[in-house]
Image 1 (spheres, rainbow, N blue to C red):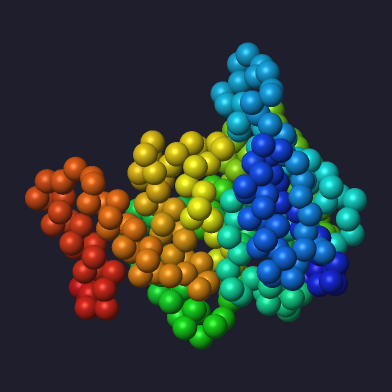
Image 2 (cartoon, rainbow, N blue to C red; image 1 turned 120 degrees about the vertical axis):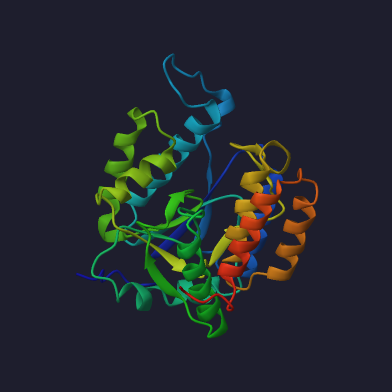
Length: 288
């Protein structure tokens, strides 16, 4: 059954390390500009740098800190009767975010049931050209018509829980399932992906994304400098940002080309295939 939780019964919190004062200031500024400062508050993150990692753990201190921070947020959600929006502090609100939150009940009323609603994700299947062509076409159409759609996240979600809304009706369930994952030795988003793919958690995602990753923060407290340490993550992040409502796709494309220009050249066959993919993504492609 659709959730009957009132749209006004929504709280939000952003997870932020005590030492990350610049991020905190930008979070507060965005929430104030969105006129949501009275509904969102700061949750101090568990600092992985202060933790002693147990022997046998596959997780870095930063990832353990991330785990514990999200569990803290979910524990706060248990004590709030409505929905809870949990954000990490590198979020960027899109121009449609406030309106979407105001109309949240209208969107979720169309769902039979849901546990989590993502407003931004790392995408699965980015090497599936057909799936990405369909996804881009959907986002283009929705954006042109100023529409937002909730899509089943199961086939789309690869990772990232930087922005998600927990259904108030199912907050205890989500908390308990996530807390069970502390012993899994998986990062918290990959544990969440496991729960979604096996059907234990029903998740949706907004298209276009109504939040995205703030371009000011290419340095993740977990991943490090994604631009220099792993350009593949940077390129995937640029694509992710392009799927957000109001995205400046020309600026993102320019940034992508600039970064790509510093990459080693690929061989002729690979370049031919790259151009084939570009043709497939175009309107000139004809199925055969």
